[in-house]
Length: 329
Length: 264
Ligand SMILES: Nc1ncnc2c1ncn2[C@@H]1O[C@H](COP(=O)(O)OP(=O)(O)OP(=O)(O)O)[C@@H](O)[C@H]1O
Ligand SMILES: [Mg+2]
Image (tube, chains in turn brown, purple):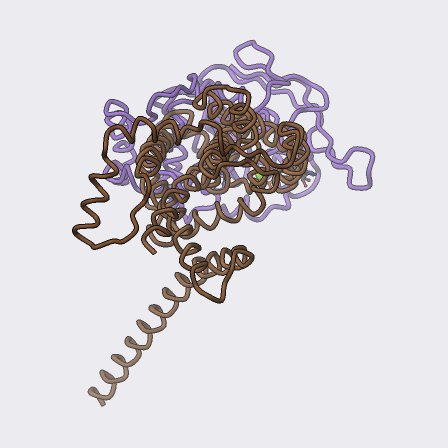
């Protein structure tokens, strides 16, 4: 149980980076970008192929970011210069990327089991520090856990990477360019009358969004030990699920709060899926169903709660009024 | 200085819906001119504003700002020189962003946008002092989302955002039309104050004839895509609504069919 949750947090933090990308396109730019299913794999493919060609793991990961950025830019160009509707631009790019990803990988699956990855390399240095033993011993003595995680290093780096990305996103969205980017999604006519090139902003915005998605893909390949042509299917829904769950739990009061909500949303999503899969009547094939139910719940429940509150408030008011009228009569 | 030379524009050319929106418009505004524009519905007033701002390109003719030809310059580049306020109070601001963020966007209108924070301490003080001049108490609500403001407040903010960077040309298209009378008066007064103070070269479309007479140093009347009347100076100060309507009838041979213009 503890191990399952632990792993869910590890992978949840990787998904959180993708979710931040989805947040940038769907929420900030108001652009329903479906490139994600493709660019996630592009990131994984580029990182994997670079690693098996002995490129240092950090550089392989950076290459994944660049590839995702380019993919997002093309979607943006299709939409702004080609005047193709946003949904269709994303679908076209996603479809094209399927073939491109196969070209990059040369085969539909690349195992990375005996290859160095950012995580295995870090685990090497981390292991020498003896932190794992210290934490695990503490957990065993205080909670009496029987099985402990084999390493805390992944959690540690992922927290750092995700936090850095979150802080950079927060900062960027408050810069002069970032404000113009947000206004492009909020009121395009207005920002054009303040001399911002909305085409360029849309292209760059989608580039950054898909760069984050590809980074998540590249990290996920290294975490899972393989890149697979089909590993991106349904990613957009997972990203949206994280955004929606996070937003409905923590609100969208400020940028800083929303990006935090999105990250936690991704981790919660992974945890719920992990728990659901542990039950005896659900198996991995039901993942997509669980995801959909989760998103529907996150969309519907907050509305139901507020309507219910409103109804209760009105009923109370009516009762008060009636008793007052009776009193007067 | 703004010069519009021989502008014509036809919508849906060579189809049954063909509409000659502008037919040979000539107009020259000297620096500091404040011109009010009136005319019936569909006269082509908004189309002319859109051609000047670059939201539309003319079929023939040229637009010059400060003797520089900008006819084919896209809207976002031209807005380096132009400030605009639209009729719809929702159009001029970004509702999901805060008041100070909106002002920061306006602040960058004629500058290169960088990766520095849009709002800093110094700018916040500047924004506060500008907001205070509106007398709406907005200076105490810098971090409130603009979507929460009333229509009048949003329009006052739009006007401030369009003007505080002192653009070469200010375009106002019925920017008080969507407001209730007292709010409209507030915005009208703010407009008069800011144009007087900064001597902005201004073109203002209005359906309110009294407003068109009260404001500015020159008045033009449009009909069917043409400028049919152009008065300035003393001649304008002596104008009345009756004289304007009479003038329209003399030129066009029909009554002006727009009730809103008379009542306005
Ligand atoms: N995009 C467009 N496509 C087709 N016809 C248009 C378009 N925009 C405007 N028109 C037509 O051009 C003519 C001039 O329109 P315009 O909006 O400039 O009038 P206006 O003087 O601003 O009128 P109002 O006082 O109602 O705002 C109208 O007949 C209008 O129907
Ligand atoms: Mg109009």
